[in-house]
Image (cartoon, rainbow, N blue to C red; front, side):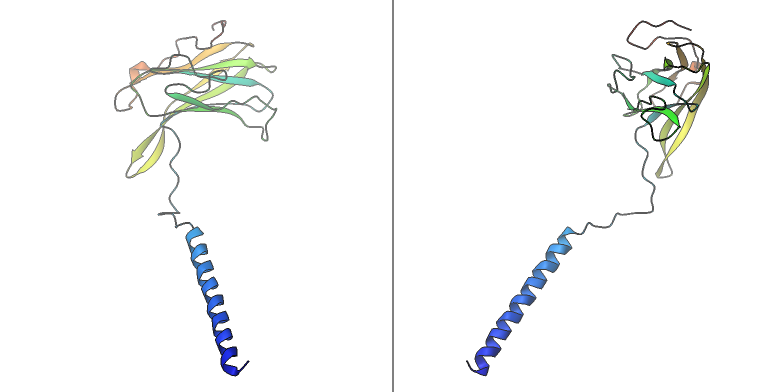
Length: 198
């Protein structure tokens, strides 16, 4: 084989290797995700209306029960999603839990005008009495961003096992504003099974 034949083979081999490298480059380029528009922007919180309860560390299992416009059945541990509300966390106390912090929360899909009720229930409470903090917040657009604004809070004392108490009742208008005159703690049973009122 002469020098010309070696140079043709070398040239073909070199072009083949360059072709493979260019193809590999384009394949890798296609796999790279485009940059997010604004990586520094905070993610919008989920849901529109937020109900949350917290109680002291320990092995007490307190449950949130929620009712709202259009809900055929109240939302709680045995019915975690409905027409409007979704229960995101059912806290059982110490077990199984990675932290001592006890809380339950639920979110709505949209803000619907009408009457809302938030109850707390002492499902399993070996340590009594127990104070439960209840907060209702709304995610509202403000100056191009979504902000969480607390619209009400309450503190409820549970004094016996099985007790269900109404923490908050309120009415929202078509704009998602709470009517200040509508807030109350008048008992409304929400759990599916029969319970003893306050």
